[in-house]
Image (cartoon, rainbow, N blue to C red; front, side, top):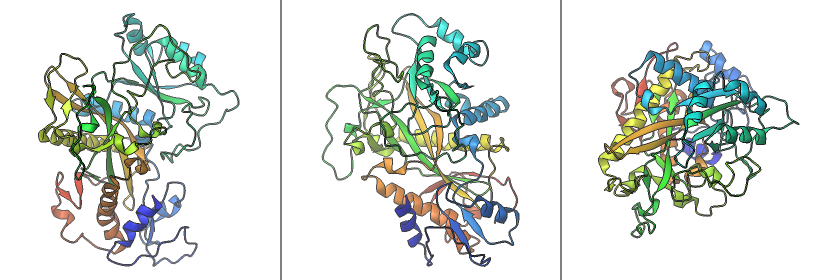
Length: 461
């Protein structure tokens, strides 16, 4: 990340001085760019300049308050409040059914079944006692990189998961509530301490994901890819990078990544026998066909083999979840449809966050890069594709893009520098050949597609 930012700044048309620590001098005439992690920057300087433009010019790479976007339980509330006022929003279809809960001990579930989780409890009680059950995903509200994600199908299995999370030696709240970065963990243990992560979301497991085989993707400069010998596709999710600037413009990198699960997809089933897992991961249920987060694939020596550009999937066969579904291949118009849906979903996600003014406060002298995780489902009855938003990540783990597609990050960061950084540092009213006054929403320049352009807080700095 540091090297990527450094290389980006060195490509700017004018020389900039790059330092590893915040300068201590009080030189009010020098423009300061803080392009660093949330914890390493001075938010006091950021707020000071946003409120008093006569002070030292400061541009920062992170909004101080943005929980409405990056915390799963806050994002759920953001969506609930927004769709209640905008019933025609694309988010009505794009957001999976979700419940947000807070608990410190597993036995608190008993009370939640008659309160916050009453509707979910009814659905679990109605599920047939067979392999064709409904599945749900549990996610800690303030964890990242796949930590604590579990799959369950009934009340008993959810209780077992929470029992495995209980940590009697820890009673503190998570201190990273605002930082929100995708931390790098060295341990293969994906369990979490419930007393430190009291907030959880329960999300519907979407049963009909779009399935393709990444080995069928035609990669430029590579030999002809073989067809899948098993005739079964793999589940994947989309990682879309976007940049928010000021208060507020939103830009999407249209080069979206497809991150694949390491194993061929199979419908989750309930097995009567099998070894138990002391972490409550659903016992003997193999999660590798279902969890597409590449952070969980540490044992896979070929991470690059599980990462593709969305555009590279053109021509790949669609493998329906049901064997009697129609046979078809992804066409260019399918990819265009997916990208357009992603742009619209992210636009309304940020509009929804703007309505949560306590938990998202954009400032005119800030820009920030986010990584959005989305899933595409395929309806083989009407041959339609639907994009669903799963979560938003601050300080996304960009290294998971892999070496082969590093150039995408180089181009994206250069675009962010041209659009968000360069005008501020060099006091430009407009970017050369890209005057903001005629850059319309939906248009792509500098490798960035403008998705949103609104004025919500003071004049642009």
